[in-house]
Image (cartoon, rainbow, N blue to C red; front, side, top):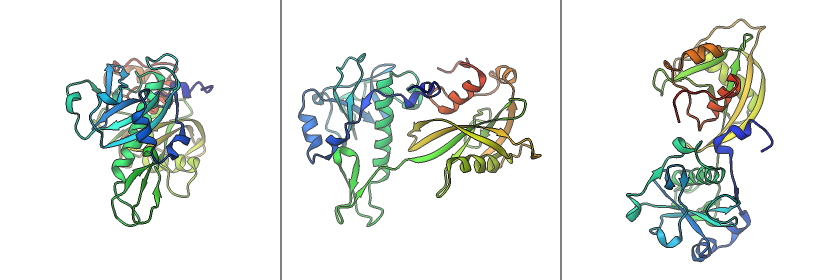
Length: 309
């Protein structure tokens, strides 16, 4: 990743060759499960099996109860992991954890920034595709139950043989600054009242990313902004977003005042760096796994120590 900002994004890291050509074999999963080199990543209720507090457990096929769903994630390209480079990895989604129920399981939202590049990439990929499967159990065309195909990368309508492919929702997230280089943060109605983050929103059909930046900021804050500049993107599989990071400036030619929309955003505040530093005991910032945290720290000039691991 030559872009230094991208290197800050925990869930944009990867050491995985997705090996997409292997997905086309009708018996791809059967062959992978029969290969002694294959390792499974057990998943249960949105969590993944851990080998330590900050590492995924990739285990032999025989060590895992029969899964409800298998998805081929690809080949590990890591040269620093316990498994050799070229190891095939398959996500195994369990309906019942069985003998693994007492093992240690972890959440990507909590662990993403602490995982290795390979494990962050595997977990993000696995959670995204597994969440998609959970929401597409029925065909949007005929209403019949669909079945997984292509090693877990499509679902098939058995009445028409139509293939339904995974979808990702594009969302912009913006670090807005004013003429004094103060950063705009808002508190969402769904959060604790003292949690503040950047403003964000989904891209609408027929809309460019830049237009979405301008629209969302105005809708949520009443501010007119200019110069949206793209920084980088990070997948956010909670459940199915791709967060596209931007910076933008308050338009100095337009008189405006902070006007929270009252529905999504209940409070808005401008922060200087000193004010943000002084407020850390009072407010909560986005967690270290999020792109919001990376954009805030880019503006701040370095890591922010707020006691959140």
